[in-house]
Image 1: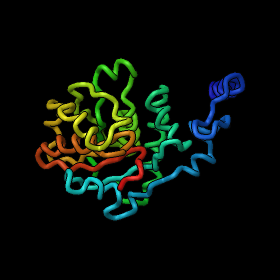
Image 2: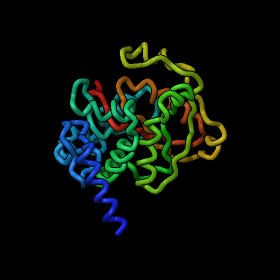
Image 3: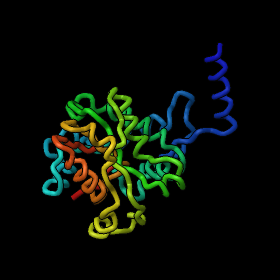
Length: 236
């Protein structure tokens, strides 16, 4: 009975204030979650997890030793799919990201990408930005993966100082912009000796943030690091 009432209320709410697909703007059906079926089916997947020494892994080679790396879909400025990242980060819908990363785990089940992962962690957000935004979108993404895999999410890193936006900076500017901005969360890091950690962020462009954070994680004895981002720019 209560389930029927909830369904009726949800349907009524969709009539008064319809939920819209962030990609195409189409009203969502009652059984569609966050994205419409068509846009979800057309998601520009990278399929990096199916390729040995893929483009993303090549991007980090020689910078920091990682085990594996993948991104769920391609990010291109101006693409309708870019609105997914923008909504997750700035428009108060981090649960859409959590839902998408849980789907990613299912979609990647045929690969060995998540095999042997012990712990999931996220690129941290400085407390000043956290207070302004109200959440760390990367933590939601990481928790979606952790919940889907049934393994712990642990805050392994902390942001020690805020940095200016990376959006309009080149690779070298981004690298210089984040030096000294992150540190290990020593209380939790001490529990991670010999663990395989999956480091999660929303998008990889130049890779500077993931490189710095991975380098910090690699100072924990015996740690292995793999990388997952919800989206990736076309890396070269």
